[in-house]
Length: 241
Image (cartoon, rainbow, N blue to C red; front, side, top):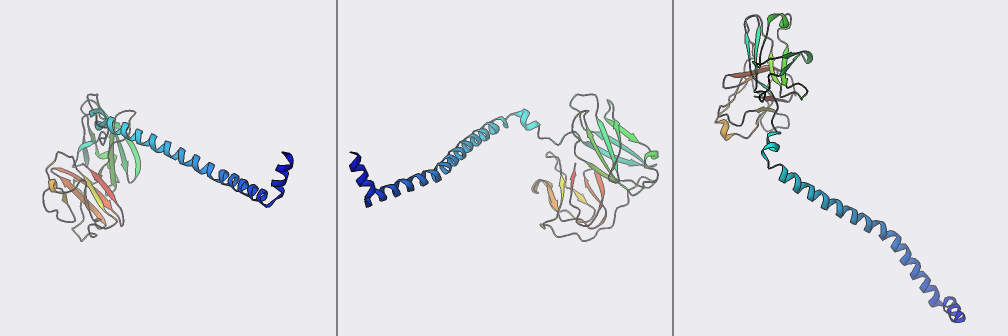
């Protein structure tokens, strides 16, 4: 038996058999990790699909849909002579009040408690020497994240914000744009200080998107609500009502 095996190995057929075995061994070494990677990827894809199905079914609930709100925000900000800024925040969900944060010229200035009335009056002492600076106001419940920003400009003592004259803006549909986010229940059409808006907002996509306004103090309004800001070149902005 040993002599026969020796004769086969010593012959040409023996060498051919060894070459085939070595080739199969190398093929196994190459295909093993590849097949393992395919199996791992397949398992992960199945897990991801199952996770997507679970998330989709959970998202159908009212509680999950309610969590996608903008958060607590301001519903009104009106300047009076002084100047004095009168603020009203949105319903705090049955809680006693909320906090209002104030940013002036891009810097955080102060945080205020609205109390049970959810309203706030910011007197002339706060705005002394700050006429023409941009103001951002945001509200939140204690311990929660800030809601959407409300933008305005500090007016002179008469309480009237001076808005730049209308001027041509960048073409709509470009890569840079300005966006207005309106409440889903409104039927009002926004008014822009630098251009006309035609048609009903109900026929417009949400959010309402326009080309960038020209530089200067610009204003948008929705019903009786107004927001103003200092538009700079290439400044893309989202305005929330």
